[in-house]
Structure formats: structure tokens, C-alpha cells
Length: 336
Image 1 (cartoon, rainbow, N blue to C red):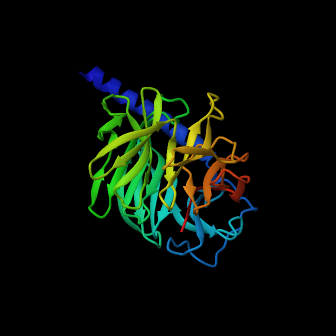
Image 2: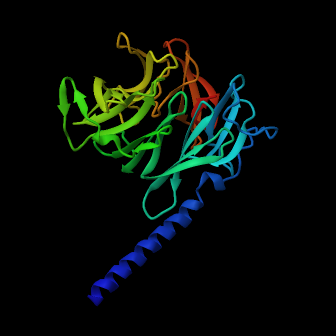
Image 3: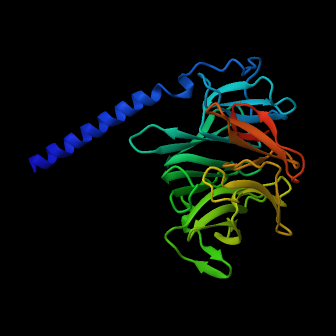
């Protein structure tokens, strides 16, 4: 027994030493420890508020002490000076003056926290989560919330090589489903049972009862329509990931797998829900994001830049025109 205890203690110390070594090494490369980018102009005249109309709220990805903090710019001049808050998130979303911040949490295992904030970015509620932050979404009135974390692996470039946990919370009823994998799933007319079911990328309708999401099972991905009241989900079509419902509730922006090339697997599309007709956007680069609608005409998303960060881009939702850089050094866009 003594030998077993000593062996366990030695193993623990070795793992702790390795973790400390990794942490010290990683801190030297952290973007928030790097020198601030002089090209990023900061507006110090006002605070970030989630109820101020005409603003584009996003996660600041510029290197420097403000890396990862929630920021905002004028929608009329998105490349202009940005206001920067003190709230740090890995993923952020805003709707109806409320915010949802998904952030990594310290600990021996990958963990996260979903933090609800008010219009002034003050915390009003938090939920502890397992895994690595990935997606965050609120319903149009801010009542319903959803988030996705990776619990194994760090990518879904190859289907079946990861596992997700997606939660849905009804804030009005204070009801939380921490993992929606158990929701009855119908593929066609048949109830589908499998151990490999993974959901991610929820988006809510105006009525707070219906939602859309991606489900993966059997090596395939499906766009599903979910009903919060009846608590079931029904597949609408294959090969549609990370849906985002338009303001009028008639269209979905989504990413479609168009290639087996792991570096450029997806292209952003818009789906007409009445006709199920899909339109590819003018953006031909691979978008690994849950896009958002800035308005009825514009879809926004983030793309990696050549400097190790990301930028926010926009493209017309009807497939016309060309993609346009909206916010350099940004991610997780949403309009107020």
C-alpha cells in the first residue's frame, strides 16, 4: 500500500511539474503579454455599452494588454477607433442589451464559464462548464441562451474526432439543460438512437420556442430544427453547420463542407427556409465560425489573419458583391 501511495504521489508531482513548465513557457507567448499593435486606435471617450444602438460589439484580438477583451466600434465606421472594456472572453454575444461571455476557467482540466452580463457588462449570473469554449448565442430578446464547449480534442475539421457539450438555458424560467444530447432526434420519420450524437451551434427563433442547430452522428452532419416546448429535434438536411437565423426568421447562414482539404473545408452559405434553396456567399475563404447577421443584408464572421490573430469580415447575404474587412483584429461580432 505504501509503495502505491508513493508512486501516486510521485506521478502527481511529475504532472504538476510538467504543467508548471508548460504554463511558464506559454505565458511568454501569450498575446496579452506582447507589445500593443500601434495601428489599433482606441477611443477612450466612452465605455462599451450593450444598449447603445449603432455599435458593432466584438472580441478584441489585437496583441497587447487588451487582447481578448470585449470592445465596440461604430457600425458606420467599423475600422475606426474602438472602445475597449475590462471584460475578457473567448467568445461573446450580445442581444437586446444583454451579453453572454464564454471564457476559459483556471484548473487542472479544461473548463469554462458562461457569464451573463447586463448592458454595462456587469455580471448577473454565471454557469460553470466543462471543456474548451467554442460557441455562444442568445435569442433575439436575450431570454434564451446557448453555448458549446469542446470536451475532447480541439477541432471538428474531421468529423468524429471530437466531442461537444451544448447547453441551453431559459433565463426567464431559470431552467438549464447542461447537455442537450439527450433530446429526441428524428432523421426522416425515424427516431435516431446512437452514442456518437454531438450538437453544436444553436440559434434561436423570435418565439423563444424554436431553434436550429448542427448535429453530428454516423460521420455525417445535419441541420436540425428543434422545439423547446415539445423537446425534440428533426433533421432538415445534411451538410449544414453552425447555423445563424436571419432577423426576419426566414433564412439561415451556415457553413457547408465543400472540400476534404483540412485547411479549406468550408464555405459560407445562406439557406432560404421556405424553398430550401442555398446561396453561396461571395466569401470563398474557409469560414470556421458561427456567422451573425448584422442586419437583413449583411452576414459577418471572423477569419484568421496573417499576424496570428483574426479579423471580422462581412459579405452580402444574397451572394452578390465581395467580402469586406469590417474590423481588423476582431472576432465574435454582433450588432447592438
